[in-house]
Amino acid sequence: MGHGQISEGDFIQFSAHEVNRPDKKRAALVYEDLCRYLPHPNLKAATPKMISRVYRESIYEQAMSPAVI
View 1 (cartoon, helix red, strand yellow):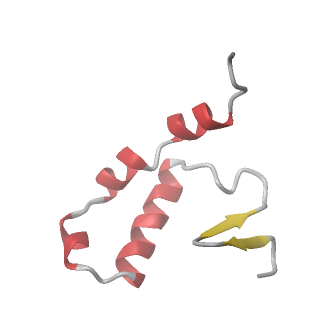
View 2 (cartoon, one colour):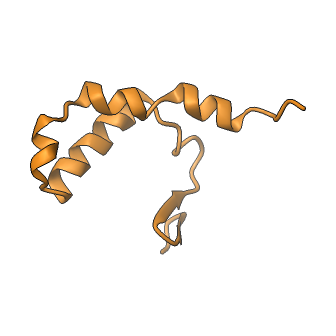
């Protein structure tokens, strides 16, 4: 795909430093993109705050931390 983007199935991974971190700013961008590219009636009820409840840094941090056995 070029420019540090890798396509694997239904996912696109970006390889720049911290680009996959789901911070609040990125959550707002995801919300904007959803509304722009997926004009679905259910998105009208969604808000940026709702997106940030599922697009969370805490989940990312847990997934990226070393496994505890």
